[in-house]
Length: 53
Ligand SMILES: [Zn+2]
Figure 1: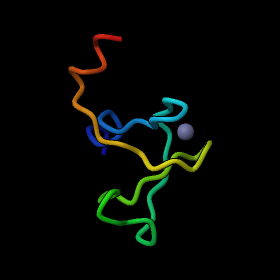
Figure 2: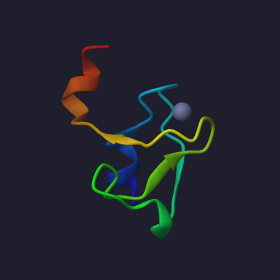
Figure 3: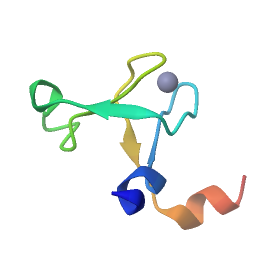
């Protein structure tokens, strides 16, 4: 579970806080994860790409 939270980020507010719902699962959001702040679909990123920031 920790590994998943580290690899998901909100592209809108860059939060890593999200909630998952089976109703939100789609082709673009296979994890069904949405940002708890702005309700954006969380994107899965490789940890290495965030070290550059
Ligand atoms: Zn957000």
